[in-house]
View 1: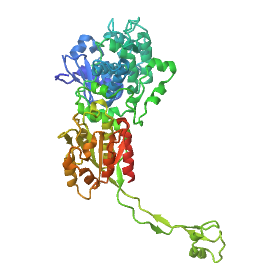
View 2 (view 1 turned 90 degrees about the vertical axis):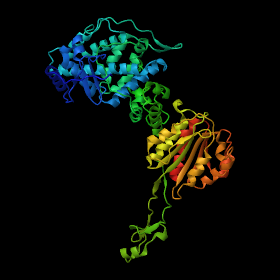
View 3 (view 1 turned 30 degrees about the vertical axis):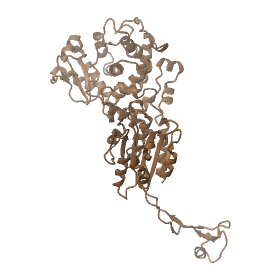
View 4 (view 1 turned 90 degrees about the horizontal axis):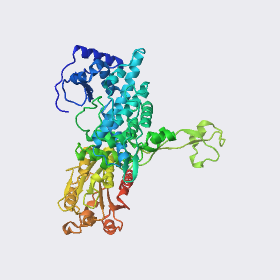
Length: 578
């Protein structure tokens, strides 16, 4: 939004504001007015919680006579839907998923369309709750929300808004035709992809399904948003200009940060299958969609078809690196296990006497404790007066130490690029986050052709710095930086126990000196200074097997790069077990 001039509320506006707060039973920071704001609506909200009205536009539309209800509606955005900025982002994401599923991901403006759908859904839930509160306060009076919509209702709403208004009539217990025409408008054409029909509209049925979804998910706007998005999709895809004349929505400035987006992508509700409410109703499967889709602990779960390409389009106003950081951070999370290693060899067993128990006739005679037996009774009766005392082995637990990892990742043109949902980068993110979760440090180096090297200058415990280095992509040839490797391990302190990992494809002959004769012995020399050294290679011919064996390197061969995450999980287990 452009810069606005705000003013405090007038006495009459403040009375309406206090009335709205009392209706909800909350206290918020004062609302503001911005006369002649030139915004699409006469009221809007934003985070951190604030509410603004344009009294000039409200008067022009006639809404100023129901200002307490206008304020009550806006307060509902902070109390009920979306209630928080995180929920606002989640609801938008759900709408985008529904639209993508209904359009094969070819929507022109996913962010704007998802935001419009999110606002319509939240408005429906809030208006229904406000009416309920107003009826409880004064059962004999017509709710202010109904009076407001008698003013705001247009003679010919567009088909989607007709569906919303007709669902509102059903939810509010109003006769057909109270706030929208009784007859349903013509349905927009089906959403298609080639010869495949993706979404079909039926306004009368959709209104009933929407009312049903609003009842089922009145307290979970995030889950319900997916249903609303699927119902609204054919209408939104058929027509780009939808005008409701209602709330202006979330006016919060700025896209999410990488951390905010990662937190949003972590939510299990984003893994729910996008099943149209008509199909749910037909099969009675409200819970099945969630049960099948909410596989939050499944490392392969990728958000049910809403992939990285769609996410980049949805958050096109964010820096690409921030979106990629959030994506790989979240995608690696189910695989992450804190990375630690056995510290020092355990000490010798120290045996101390244990408790005295009965020695029975079938026990090992070596366990018989004669002093304890005689002390118990001067008469020795096997199995009655005989005693045994087993030693307790005091073996202190073997301590674990944090891992220091030196990770080299190939970013040559033969490797998958970050924006293509690279399993190699996912594997790298798994290693990075596993080390940091165990309290260790990582040094990440991205390499390609000669002179194409980037990464962290030294081992770091900063996840943002490490992931940013991981995402650096050159798209050149493949020449391993042996000069850098040699210099790094020449400076390595003897007490540092470092693990070396190189992730690449079959172009890694240069690691063993091919084309770099001056550094032919570096790999073998470095191996002697590492706790472990592992090559994770997409190399079906095992073309570097002999060189790796001669230099003492372990090799994880991949059948496809999609196997890299599991290979990293196995590597973690080996390091953890020492």
